[in-house]
Image (spheres, each protein chain N blue to C red):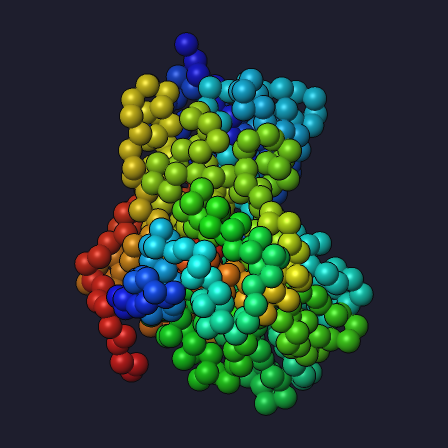
Length: 415
Length: 105
């Protein structure tokens, strides 16, 4: 009998999951992907839009075109999931029954949860680059900015791509330097963390890079209110960070329908998920991939990509009535753009923090070290994303499990 | 890992002052732990947060973040900062004797 797999979300995880499952199981399964729109954005590209290094049109394609033949695509808002009846109610009135449900609806920005963030000054002095529209509006604001205080602020974790705000700081430093006005711009990075990043060795390294670039770091800052008219971030502890231009990464939550589906999500609408099998804790026939899961990994495309293998084999095991594999190790890697056409690369998992060395082995891309090669890698990755990663092909040399060869546990000297 | 004495009992805490074994904690330790964080008196509201932190920790394996606390503890984020001015999630976790909340990845 044909089994029905419904995938909620046609982004990175939903698309690569659908394509891998379809390739592997063919006509044994009927796969349906549901998304509220047909715009698939290559989100790493958003970082480059404010600096005129990418055009919003270049980083967007139709979702349905990324799916293999035989995968059905439904464009509709999702109303709610009835875990007991094993049905998804979508807003065009249809009900979709499933044998297995895959939640892949990612994270949602919730700027409305921060007082004043969307108030007066939003879109004039206060921006975000986490949406295509926001990134484009910010590019005009940066063009018009001749000097003053630029503040880059993360309201609270978790956020998508936790290194992106740091990359924004590095690129802003290079951008203003190239425009010849760096001496007229103060850059401040205000973060709720106690350092530049979450993991100690990388945090120290990235903190040093902020200092070298004369970027101030304000730590343990929890934004309570944004005063867009007065140009101030006001912390819950009473501290204030003044700005002429603020780039704010708003709070994140899971998709809204998760909150409308009894028993599916947590307080932030993320789905409680086993961090190794990717089976949800809400129901045995519900699996989760990507940012929608509450697993203790970065919310990032690379994590989603590495989860793909485990997700697909466990869905297959589940449909066959076999035990699941605890296959996912929390593997993440990211290119961190550092300006002046250089980037560094970090690679880590649940157990091992980002370490220096080379990836994927002793001969490979340098880790935790700026290089032009890493910058080229970052630029080339967009093509890999559309042509290999989304179709669900294995990338040569890039395994799902984090490699340890090529890494060492001390900080290398700079050349 | 440093072993130390709190309210007459031996406990294990890490270098950041978080308990590594939440079962070593007793309510009698809270006032002493609070004073070390600059909180002279624990009010009912402090206790509400402390008990909530422990309950969440034992249910979910990690203490809540400030934002989760604001949504679920019955105390708003603003009030949480009044109770624990130096950072509610961290300070309350230390006083409540649970490991560091792993909210930030």
